[in-house]
Amino acid sequence: MSNSRKHTLAVITACIAFVIFGFSFMFSSIALSITSTMVLLCFRFTVAVITLTVVVAVNSLVGRIRGKAWFSFSLRGKPMGGLLLLGIVQPVLYLVFENSSIRYTSSAVTGTVLAVVPVICILADVFISRESVSKLQVVCAVACVAGVALVETGGETRISFLGFFCLLMTLVCDVGYYILSRRASRQFSPLEVTYVMFLMGMIVFVPAALIQGRGQMAELFLPAIQSAPFWGSVVFLGAVSSVGAYGLLNYANATLTNSEASLIGNIATVVSVLAGVLLLRDPFSPLQAIGVVVILIFVTLANLPKRKK
Image (cartoon, rainbow, N blue to C red; front, side, top):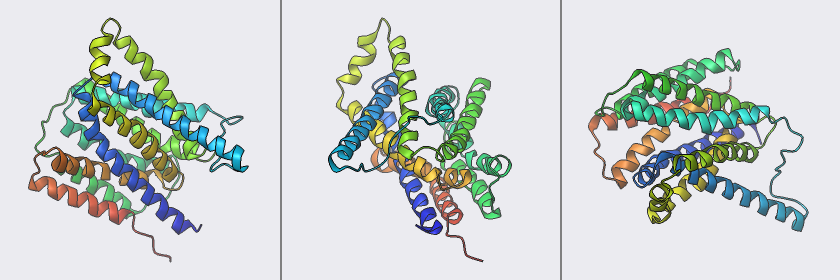
């Protein structure tokens, strides 16, 4: 496959991943109306790991029957340090800091500040990864921050010192994910990267939920277990969003630069807003509409095929 086609495929897979991420906000809201954050994470990562384990097991079985598996999956003998660090940064630390920032900071502030991730990724590309970055990418990254700010217009503006610190650490973890995922892609397949990421999540969040529920297991777990909307949300978040979307994004990160992948991430903001408007009947103002258009225009401009010189 030519480099241009490989790049186009990576852009498409990243777009699909962030469309799925956009819907995940809605499903998270549904699940969190039924149970606590830690219980949701416990179930989400358990479902993700079970789904991945089934996929790996079926692939192994196919390999034994046909003599050739659909894809390679082997962690044996590979250097695991960088991959384990990736799993700690994303999803573990990222979700801890993100949920804490949401608790102490309004969603409008959180969404706008997290839109700065592509700008930081551009700096990381230049000074850490030594990747080339165009002026157009810089303009598009800054414009997308403005677009997200418009989308979040009208929301409550609230921030505290602790909220700001957690938000800053969320930014660091988000940028760290792009850098570490791109590095891991040199030695691991997208499925191997995704499996270890969510295995780390399950190892941390299942005990955390059990510790939180000590003495009140029925109150915390029973409403979730008995709720069909909760299970529907968990299946989407665990199997579709975690396994599917992160698998696609880890595939895309092997080809795209950190700044390219993170810029496409603004699509998730657009999808989450439109999903809320169309499915949950959330209000939608003219300024939000302008913000959506700005994001879509500049994400598209940033990912147009490069002309050959």
